[in-house]
Length: 342
Image (cartoon, rainbow, N blue to C red; front, side, top):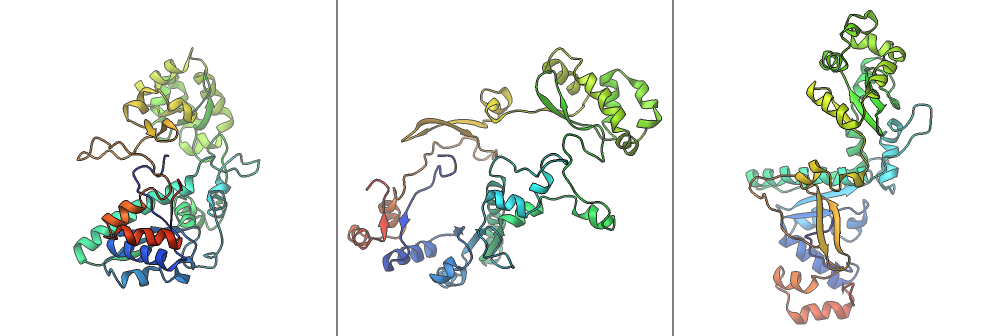
């Protein structure tokens, strides 16, 4: 209901002669082919990029897999949690004294999909300028590995700095981390630029004269003394609203930790259309996350529904490929086409 809205569904058994022909014909008539089978699946059916581009040389194809089309791990099965573990993301998540933890939503799946969307845009722009299609090999593990920002620090330090889980408070920057608020938790980020702002917000300019806190490096070295002072100030407010208002006024970055369901009815997320109420033919009205891209040329989003399996077999094959009703009936008889409502 969330990820398939707006698609038209054709359900094909490509291990039948008719089903394979449908896939080949669709690929020849389309600008883009996206697939996320494991390496070798398309090759065994002669539906890989080189085979498909023989009929359409300017085809753009994106192959999404767990570990990529080549490499020692390319034939390994992988899902989101496996990718979080293999990419280093899980190593960096959780308390430093405890076991690694996973991000509790499909970050690898969804981030890779967005990377695929970005790749398609540039591949199509390249085709528009040169007339050339291309094949994009996109691995979930690569996408998650690409998010790392501490690998260079490890190399630059000669290996002495080893990226690790930081838990509530960052070991190199202070005060940066998760604090108790009057209600719940919040994340405070104060670097060199924000340090004077925080002192003004706290009404404690004398801390700026304390030699223990003169630089970020010193503040990090004296976390044990500084963190309790900041924590006490955060808890001195009657409620979160008063605290947040003070931080905003003094340009101190503070984010309250929100549960996903708290976005429902929240003024900011509602104003950004990030909580959407959409209709589904089976479930009725459902709430889903909104669309993050705000395009000026398409300010209004269309009303879309997720299709049933094979719902558009006839429509797509007749409209896009020009198949006759008799040809479609033959494909059903052969077992090449299927519908979820039959």
